[in-house]
Length: 127
Image (cartoon, rainbow, N blue to C red; front, side):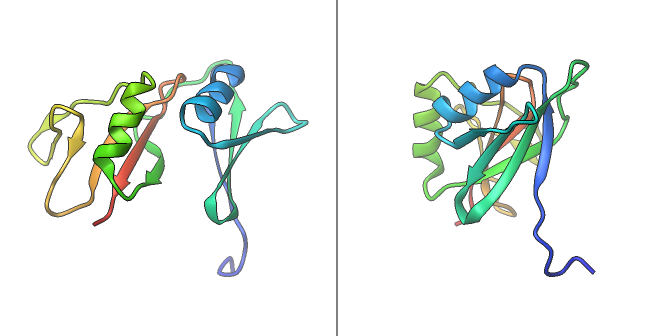
C-alpha cells in the first residue's frame, strides 16, 4: 500500500527557536520555517523532518534521528568543538569510549548526543 509513497518523520521539541539554532547553526542542517509554526529540516536525498513545538514535551528515550558520516571520529571532534556533549554508556553491549563512541563489532560505530529538548540523536559510521 505505501511502497511508493513518500513519507517524513516528525518529533516534538519544547523550544522551536532553540531547536532552529541547534539544528541550523550547530549541526549545519538546512532549516526552514513553516507557516504552521513548525520547522522543517531538509536533509540529503530530499528527506524532510518536521520539528513541532509541544508545551508538555517529554524527550524521547530512544534515538529519533541518525546522521550517517564517513568518519565518526572527525564528526565527534567537530561537534564537540561546537559544544555538543556526547552520551557515555557503560552497559555490556553498549559501552562507549572516552569520546562517546560505541565500537561494538556487531554494529556500526555510533555516538549519541541530545538536542536542546533532550531528544536523542546520533552520528554513525557504517564501515
